[in-house]
Length: 116
Image (cartoon, rainbow, N blue to C red):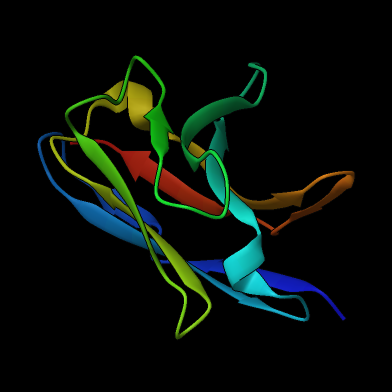
């Protein structure tokens, strides 16, 4: 059974940092492109950061470039999102995604709230 379990969300002040984790199981993690998306209230889900394939090439949404970093640990089937210099507009539910060809899986999401 495929599972993606996000953790690490919470309440943080503007300018602060959080690290999200997504623990994967039930599929060959190292063969999948892994991504982070987010969805704010009333807005569409948007790409935050991604490995474009199972390899090391990464892409970032324009609004997070230079502040967020995606990384993966294939030995522990985990993908991370390091978020620095957080802003109010980063408030959203953050979702982990795994994709390979026609196959795609989503986690349940973790809430990130940036507020003073």
